[in-house]
Image (cartoon, rainbow, N blue to C red; front, side):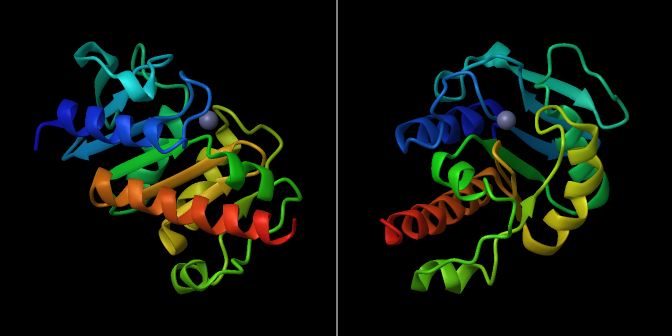
Length: 181
Ligand SMILES: [Zn+2]
């Protein structure tokens, strides 16, 4: 699997599905052995170029140019078996997470996938040491987590499966939001 082409393909899908609202937000990574390939900070998820991918060794705490969420991705890789992660500012998940409670889906598909979707209630939401510390255990149990008011993290063995998890969370949150209208 070619890392760049896979990230470029999934980035376009995220963008076209409206899962990335602000063009430079969000990030994704793939782990191969001790190497982490992650989106460059500030690069546009929907329009990735080859030099928008930063390669780092997993021992590296601050690789130059990497996404500001690198520390969160690295913490997940160091504490779980997952090999791909996506973080996106998914609008309905953000809105539904605002009260800081775990989200219980109301639709059949949402309930099939999730008994509840965990919401991380933290003081600092972006590039946060607290998120890096708390999220691995949650991801290990659920595969996904929403950082309150910020966005969704999803981890899997492939980027495509992580993308699928992002859409499953957003679908459950969107339907729950619409149900209340
Ligand atoms: Zn973010």
